[in-house]
Structure formats: structure tokens, C-alpha cells
Image (cartoon, rainbow, N blue to C red; front, side, top):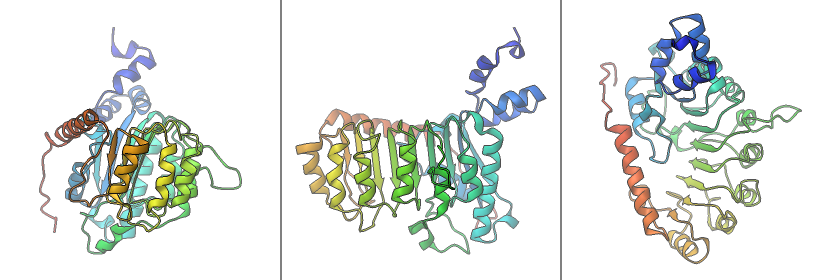
Length: 338
């Protein structure tokens, strides 16, 4: 039996396990293969960078809790031409344009998507809002290691708020629309999303069980109050709110954690206005969450847990992910890098 004689559903299942580059090669063999390949891409980690060094570092600098799609051959890095990277706005515009085109061309079957860019703009947000089968979404905009003559280092301290997030939060236009709908995990790094915008995403995606929010400084007590009465209050398993030095992120938000009864992992790593001892005490007496990462400094975030076995397992998984993601990596030196 030849591959072409297989039913489409079975062929798509086989092709979904290919690395992205192999899938692309298959798509070039015929028109039928091209059509089949476009509906077989399920996992994609896409980064668009202004130089190759930045791309290598960005995919190496990944938390162990993130789905390791890049270690499964599903990562694609694109380096913009030098003439397209003269200013910050030019970089951001071209990053969004490239990513939007790839998603529009291949997005129908994507379930696990990671995007590594500098900011989110309307063309890409529009493309993301059309993905019907998305289960896991990671938008990573935090790259303090990136260097560019027209980008001040303070740029990475916070992201601006904006209406672009309305395109993903069912609040754009006169008629509310349902965006995604099947989302199970959401990771945002250095995002300007507001309380209301994030609440609307959760409202239309009641299957979310993992929520990771790094350097989302526009969030306040209002969001945690909503989370405690939201459709995911009892089913949320992972809540990581990290690298948040906003004064809004203080002891008031701890009132609502106890109502998230399904939590297995909670992190407030590098949230300076939270007291680690208070969090440790609340977990021992009330919450009893298996894994809790308190708001220590970024240099040494110890893990406190009411379950020693859970801690050991978490550490082993973290080391395994690190080994899998970096062990086979190589570093290419770009002669044009300065």
C-alpha cells in the first residue's frame, strides 16, 4: 500500500509527527502533498528575529514548564533581512507580518503554538483569532538579552497596554465573538493585556487548566477576584504569575487563591510585593497546594511544597526538559553580530 492510498485522516496523523522542515519538504513534492501538509501541522514553535544569535538564545532560554515542542523538531527560526531591521518598529512590523502569513497558510490544524517575537500587532492578532483547533498558546515577548542600536534596555521592563488584545478577547467590534474556544493552556510573557481582556479570554475558553503570566504588569486584584469565581476556578491546575513588580500584586490577591481548589502548582516567582513567609504559611495551613514557588529574587527561587515527592518529581522533570531542549543544541556565531 502506498502512502498516497491512505485515508486523509490516517495520512494527517502520520505527517503530524514529522519535524516542520520535513513536513515542508513533503509539501513540495506535489499539489496533493501540499494540500495534505497544510492540514497536518499540529505543533509549531516559531520565532522571528533580527539576528541569528538572538534566535538561538531565545529558544534556549525557556522555562522547563513550557511544552518542549522545540526539542521535538517543531521549532522554526526566521532571521529578518538586515534592511528590515533598522528600527524597532520596523522589526516588530516585519515580525508580525511574517508570523501572520505562516499562521494563515498553515493554521487550520495547529493545536500547540508558541510565538517568539517582540510585540503583538493587529495582523498577527487577526490571524491568531482564526485558529479553530488551538489547545496551547504561548506568546513570548520578553527578551532582555536582545541588543539593537535603536532599542533601549528599559524597553523590556514592561509592555504597553493596547486594544490589539481585544482581537483575542472577544471584545472587538459591536458584536462579541468567540475566539479559540478550545484553549487548555495559555502562556503570556511581557504582555500588556488588561484584567478585562484576559477575563474575556478565560470566559470563552472554560477548558483552560494552565495559566502562566510572566511580566503582565497591567493585571491587578480585579483579575484574581474574577478568577476565583470564573468557569475555571475549580479546574485550573497551574497558575504562575511571575516577574511582576507592580504594586497591584500585593497580599490582597492571596485572598482568592484558596478558592482555586484544583491547583497543583502555584508560582509567584520574582513578585517583589508579596511576602514569601506569608505564602508559605498560607499553603501549610489552608491551601495545601503540592508545589508552591514563592516570590524570592530571580537569583535563587527555592521551591516550597507540602509534598516532598512532588518537589522531587518537579525538579527531575525540569532537569529532563532542560537536557532535552539544550543537550543537542549548537551555537552558531554570526560574523555580522556586534
